[in-house]
Image 1 (cartoon, rainbow, N blue to C red):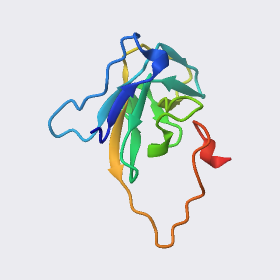
Image 2: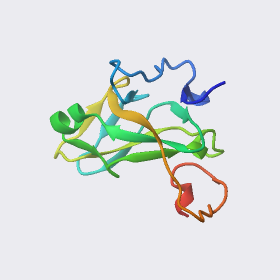
Image 3: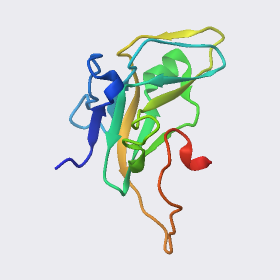
Image 4: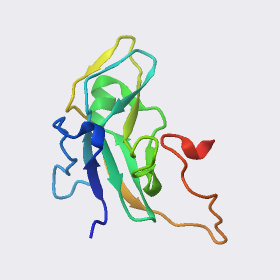
Length: 148
């Protein structure tokens, strides 16, 4: 029985995508790498594909955090601070649940990212819901679809 983890999306099968791993026994995060080369223009947001999707329990989400080395050494950040991958994003009809890392380049020059560069860490979290919670329905699509 699968509880939580990562899979390669069908479009990236055979593209030598490596499933995320924790680098040490006490690491909280799974390293997420670029699924292809990308150029990050200065002062812009770029969605960098990972070729991955994540599955988890219904009361969990995957938090996406920039790797500190990229933030400090390359002057990059996640545009939204922390990305949140909901459990129902997995296998959605728009993009199969493809995890895209939204990176903002604070530099005045482009930054080149090569396939396999570890960009972010994914941490699985449990969450609580409020009394009298009344969710709005089912996910209809992929990235940003619940904000429509």
